[in-house]
Amino acid sequence: MKKILFLLSIICFSTLAAQNSFEIRGEISNTKPNMLVFLMNGTDGKTIATDTVRDGKFVLKGIIAEPDIFQLGFVGYKEALDIFLFHDSVSIIGDFNNLSSATITGSAVETDYQQFKASFNPIKDRLNYLVQQINAETNRTKRDSLILLYEQSKGTVLLEATKFAQTKPASPVSSFVLFAISPLLNGTEDLEKRYNALEATAKKGTFAKMIEQTIADANLNKIGTEALLFSQNDTLGKSVSLKSFRGKYVLIDFWASWCGPCRTENPNLVAAFKKYATKNFTILGVSLDENKTSWMNAIRKDKLTWTQVSDLQSWNNKVAQMYKIQSIPANFLLDPSGKVIARDLRGEELQVKLKELLQ
Image (cartoon, rainbow, N blue to C red):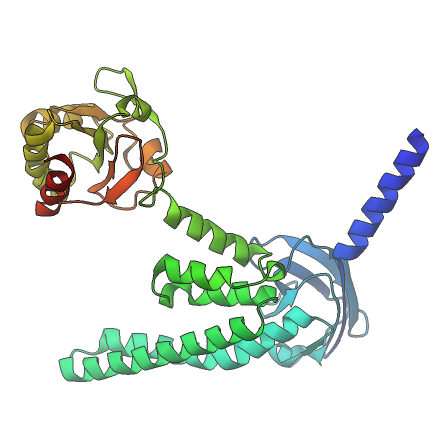
């Protein structure tokens, strides 16, 4: 029985390996004798396969788990060839002196990749050129004209990317396309909407994972979600948990003694706390300080009488990292059940929101 199970496991592994295997057969003219050719993952720099070029020919074989962009290069030479690859049998024919013009066949995802680059790269180059011109231009009228041209080119990029993703919703290249244009989109919600329209086969590989992580980070502590629970020590070294504040409206306030805008906002927080502390409202300060004396002095000087916590790790504060805090001041207003109901309320906006909830 054990032998049967062992044989079955070998068969299953062999089948899986065959499904995930790739082969690249190259025929490159003008190569030098015994050149070493390699295939490297373009995102993490890991070498996947190597071979020695003989009479301009080589074969690269291996196993890859998911589709990705790889680089085919030669040891000692800077120029490399980008290939979008999955479990394909690929043929590459070209000239070593003009490697970028090599013909690649046998990979559906590579064909998609080449198609998108043909339409996208000229517009991308145009955008980069316009950005350089805008940054260098001092004449306001000319600068405004260049910005208008930039917006027009940006619109063309988005149009091409949208068309590609809509016509190839099953291609992993579509995830790459969305990742490439994500800085030009109208926020993470726009990215999420476009990504959700793709089919499952397109949601594989490094670029899909990065998109999913971007969406997950953006949705973290989104309004309507339950705030992530945490515990951290207060000024006396006693552990304080967010969960202990359940039953109250609580404002989690990320700040630091060295943060000028935070210190400017503190009088507004003091006023809010004095006005609503008896009406089921409190504040939990999370400091990004690293010097305890500076932290304590700021608490006393600004008269912050609510609970304060910190691990004195500055931007490495574990709670700040958990909440993906990129700048301070930052805050999250939670309802008594622990759900986020507002974010980054400052000045009069905070007073208006608390009045709406508590009066």
